[in-house]
Image (cartoon, rainbow, N blue to C red; front, side, top):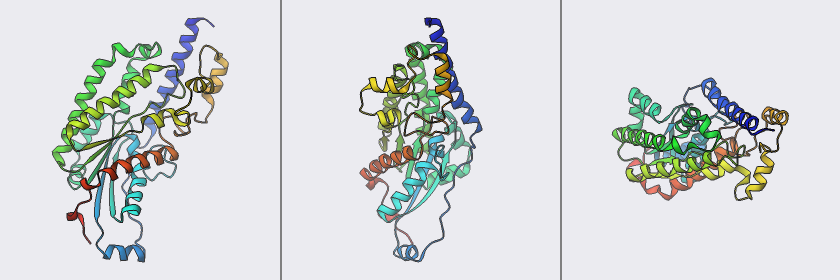
Length: 315
């Protein structure tokens, strides 16, 4: 196969996958999840009578906060961490899920600036979680397909990263305008293409750099804590293994795969990464959301003094 033909096939693969991502973004409902407490059992009523702490969890962000890929449709990690906080800490948690599929950093900020309800609930929050940056990165990839295909994103990324830094800093400033005190738990982005394109090193390099930038913005806030899920969600079951095996099992080495075989691989509905959804190949599946919850909970507990305070005990 000629180099030109290989390049065209490769670019076609990227277009199919990234194009599918944006189609999913448009088709997925943008409705937010509002947790509704189930009927209180007798035992729960007794615990309530003992005046357990009442905690407000405010989740802001994109599709990862919305819970796309969660087969139970209960809100992904937001629902899971609420349950874990209640069961492990004997607290009552009220969650407000303001994740919206497809939102970039500036769009999340615009929603917050526009919605009086979001502002009012944010003011009362004891814990804030935030997923942001994945759609900002996808926009850069969408706008630079040719550079991506040739591992030459270096020319476009400096400006893209600076733009993202400014937008993320502005988003933090807006959040702090409505709530100065609650700890923010910022969840990293990851590379959903890693298992499909292990030789496309630019994708992982710039995903890592995007996260470094986010950590820097978080550090400047002083009360934001970074939750790193990048490696596990990017590499899935291949984490810590020889990359040669991943390249072999990914079956997308364009030097050895015919165009006919390539079409068969792309039509396969089974996700190659055990932590991502079969339905869209981008978002976490139930296993992925459980992993996110585990990592988020650990960081939350390491800073428990920031959100579990005496003045939050109530009936």
